Amino acid sequence: MKPVALFLLALIAVAAAQTGCPLPFELVGDKCYHISKTMMTRQEAEDECTKLAPTGNTAALAVLNDCAHQAILWQHITEKTNYWIGASDEVEEGNWRWSTGDEVLHGIPFWFPGQPNGGTDENFLSLSKNGYFADEAGTVRQGYICQLM
Ligand SMILES: [Ca+2]
Ligand SMILES: [Ca+2]
Image (cartoon, rainbow, N blue to C red; front, side):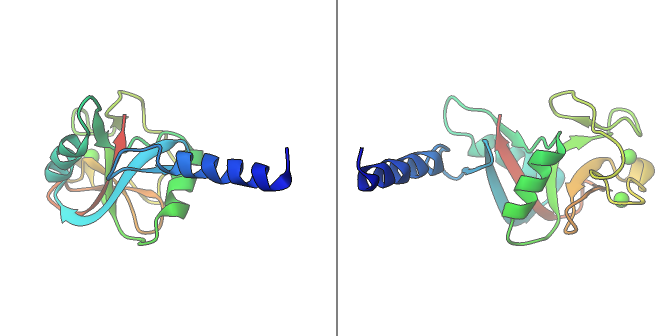
């Protein structure tokens, strides 16, 4: 095959990958995310993710349960602010769980040093403007990240 043809094939492959997620979701790494700067409480953000899922799909606040995904997503985010993501210790204080039931791993590189620090006043996970996890009160209004599950 001629180099030009190979180049065109590569372009088509890139275009296909970029359109691999239904709007308003976008492909970051190998998953479909929607990064919103709209300020919402935790509950509002969770409801909004559910609403954004196209028919036949499920969406929820993002589950960032490995540091590679956390890093790829954070590099992709242009506006470094606080975002709701999909974990809480609401059921049992200190027992942080993703919405999938998986345990939220402790320590660096996930949590910012000194977090979680809010006890029963802060039961929801935030991806903070510094790129690390922090516990926050669900009443706080901030951005949110949805993920196609
Ligand atoms: Ca807590
Ligand atoms: Ca905190």
